[in-house]
Every structure is written in structure tokens, then in C-alpha cells.
Image (cartoon, rainbow, N blue to C red; front, side, top):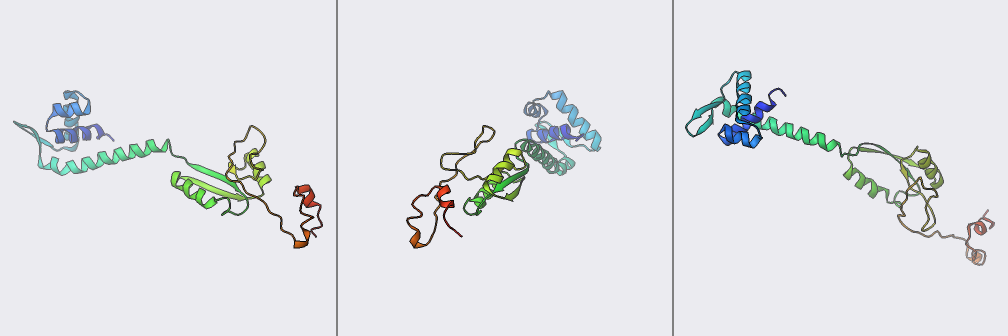
Length: 196
């Protein structure tokens, strides 16, 4: 990193052919660019430019080092960009409470999109009953989960946010002769039937 400013000055002067134009490009003064260039040449023990009437031109050593310097600066720029991207990258472990059939809750499609958008996020799946998943989200042992509720309703309490994903119907299946017994579809009435 000690040669970073010198490398920038070297590449800018090589591209522009002049210290003054390189200084404008780097938003520095001409003496500052000249000093950085001199320090780099002194540290390397190499002469990188020759003065000509039309400006500065690269020596053979300068021509050899220019692609390497450009590659080093590009690598540093990529490093800087990757480091900045980490500030907005979602990382960590997401504990998801799942219920019923994974196909029914479209878990595969959800996980596929999640991995695409947050590749550094690890997921941990916990299969359970709807009420237990809700309890675990409330007590913090799960981060998010699936929960069954009547249409338009969600878990009670302001401490949880919820979104209705789909509506579906439950069907009770019984022998053909039970049609009259199944006319009352409240859970309490269905539970009272002689199922066993």
C-alpha cells in the first residue's frame, strides 16, 4: 500500500503523457504528482519516464511495469468495491419455522429467491406445528415462520408482523352415509362426531 499514490501518479502520467494533465485527472497539484512519481522511481530504483518535447514517454522499464500497475490499481478498486458492498450485504443465519407440506407453502421457490438475493445468508429450517412456530417466533428462537390462521386474520399482538400468503379450504371426508352429520362444519361439532 506504500506505493498506492505513486502507482496512481505513474498510471495517470503514462495515460496523459503530461504531469499537468495527470494532476488535473487526479485532482492534485503538479508538484504533488511529480513528488509521488519521484518517490516511486526512487523506491523502485528505476527510471519510468523520459522527457521529450511532446511530454513524458515511458521508458522500457515503464512500459513493462504499466500493465502490472494498472492491474494492481484495478485489483485495489475491486477490493474497495467488494468491501463497500459488504455494508449492504445480508449475512448471518435465518431460522425459519415451516409447517405442513413444503410444496404447499412454496418453500422451495422462497428459498431459491432468498439465496439469489442474499447468497451469504445461511438458512436453518425447523419443521413444526403452526402454533408452536408462532410461539417460537414470539420467544425469539425462530426469526420467521409460517402460521395457519383464518382468512383475513393473523397472529394477535402488535409485536409480530404478518402477511397473508394464500387462502385455502379444509375439507372433511367421511363415509357417504354421514352427509347429515357433516352439515354443521364448526370444529367443535366435527370434533364431537364418533370418528373412532
